[in-house]
Length: 91
Length: 166
Image 1 (spheres, each protein chain N blue to C red):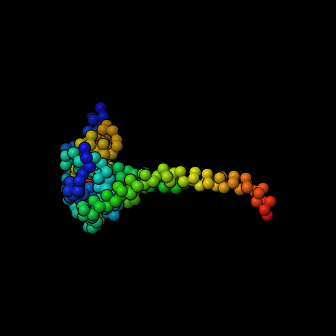
Image 2 (cartoon, rainbow over the protein chains, first blue to last red):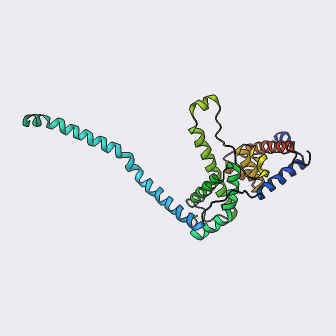
Image 3 (cartoon, rainbow over the protein chains, first blue to last red):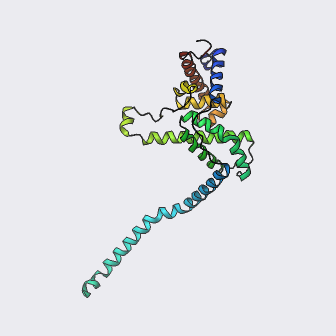
């Protein structure tokens, strides 16, 4: 049913579209194509892969950094609270 | 399967980079975008285990990566659009293509997905199944969408008097 509904294009029309697409495929754009050489891209890809691997290793460390800072601040607060009487006596 | 080594990568790049550039240029309408996307696609290709694939399968694979990158770019552009645009429904992330030849004028009037469908079907000669894989759609919807895209292009060609019927 769907095939029948969609099959409304004649063979001529189909040919026209194929011919147009073929013209389009062979039409060369005036824009310059800026693609690097394969060896340059190879080096770039290797670097990107290395950075990605480093980022993956670094990610858990980055994730726990706020907790480290938080724990440090809490410890400093407790230490200050604990030693406050002694400090006040000295002052 | 293993990753491509340098000579295999160079050969794959020589075979497919220009064709992929043409596809991406025709779909995005921007030469600079096509330059970026081709590089990104081949960088990603190197992360995939495709060393054992035949040349034709490698070509399809890199076209699929290119199509995914296009989809990601559009998705990001849609997400970055302001909430007001979304509310008004005036969001249009697809910028007008800047093709520089007269042949492309009708093609520019199509939506990017229609351009992708027609290019993959007619220029790359891919099957419905391969197009469905590349675009992440079902095989059934490819038939419908491709038929609609053909119909739209036919209407544009008829309107411009570029068909035998006109």
